[in-house]
Image (tube, rainbow, N blue to C red; front, side, top):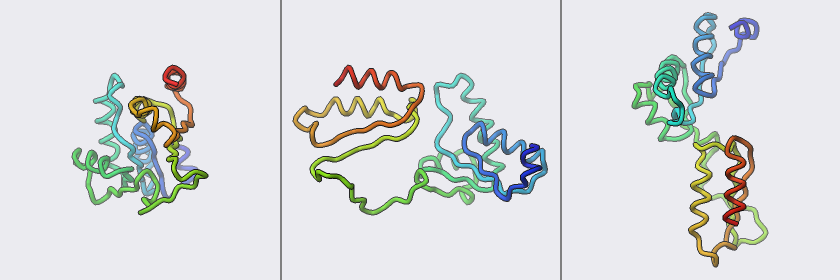
Length: 166
């Protein structure tokens, strides 16, 4: 709250369920007139013990924001389903502009290269990717490559799975 009072931002951008809830309360208590925006990435993970409480607090906070950036149409629909005004929700697909035809830069055009760059957490679905790769026949394995970059709580299990499955 004191940070809001000293910095006097024109825009307050909140970027996670916890930050959204705390940020909206701080902005209201500080009587600050900044435009409050939130980026909504998805929903509260099922693995959290008090998921429903967190979800209610998050929805409460998002309803009080001026603008909402959803990272997909699906997230926008989830928010709208919770009675968050669709007019204040805009969709920006993971912060990138979807290009009609992206030409990969590679040395061998017969090989498709996939890159994951992010935090190694369950919600990213990295284990599903590794399971899917297992189902490709050996003869097709040299038609694509997969690079994984990141850190997180699943780093060891991902590394172990890759080593076990070769």
